[in-house]
Image 1 (cartoon, rainbow, N blue to C red):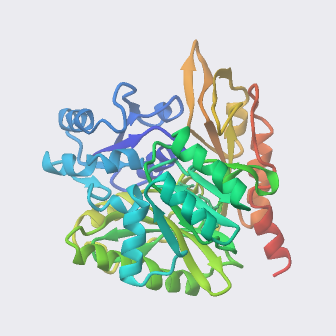
Image 2: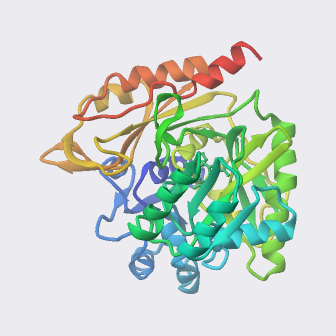
Length: 426
Ligand code: AMP
Ligand code: GLY
């Protein structure tokens, strides 16, 4: 069989590798891919991930049996609808179902209707409306751009002056291209990413993960797309808590989407805050998380092709589960100079072969130039260490990180330190 993975980041590299472990032994293609994915799949750098027409053309020409869409940008432009209409089986939600991520206002309304716990919020449709709300609210508060912002559109505001500054970012600078802003209650607790495969009716949870959003150690500095992750997360959630979260959050959402005539197929990523009074939704994504996937999929023992195919069929996941190794995975992201505000291109990366002998390296923003691998984006590489406990997995990841270098490399030194500490003193 032939599988096409759409996207070109660390998440897609991890998906490519997991597909290659399938018993179906697929030939794997990737569009656009990157310099590292090219070692594991035939890449098509000229096909942009959000160009639905070019993706359908490629999939048709190459006789693809299963397309897997990585990034939200492709889903919200209807890549899955276009592929399925052309007779190509595609894993991921339809454009209508992708609204769960594409519009925070839609997600909030659906959660309210389905009784899913989340932060209370107000939708502010103009600067004037926002200014009035800021004068009347309690602080701290959370402001978010209403739309896709690659995880960077959220500003936590300690007081009204900070909140007014945030309005300049959204409405004057137009940094996230949003026309509306969501103001939300600040949730306090630990964050958890719980991803689940959905077939329009059933929900099959994957192993939970934690993501590190801020650029600097100790959760300081601006939000990024994610600077590291680890999986599983015992001490915070075990099997019983995962089942409870799925029952309170994923199943009601999947049922509500089906009732509305837009059944959800694909992976539903619940970004949660584990609060003293239970889990609450921070956001939904309608695709695999990055860098969570790089820590979750290396531990998957079930056949990913089977799971993806079953997710496409209404009710196809009935009786299925996703099984994982007992091993731990810790993923450390290496970012280029200037990230997250910008990024640096063309810095030569050294030590990749040595690092790959210790840990699993997946590529994100990399390119090949004159026989060398160079930086080509904000998040450059993911280094995943595996081990029988969090300390061992963490040591492996950082041992490998220590072998890699490029100018301006940014790396957090505290990924999964929390997990090691939690297990040491339960
Ligand atoms: P989002 O883009 O909505 O996932 O938000 C990005 C990050 O901002 C989250 O992962 C949290 O770290 C933080 N965040 C967003 N909303 C809240 C909230 N209501 N309370 C506390 N932190 C939040
Ligand atoms: N790691 C956060 C995300 O994928 O949205």
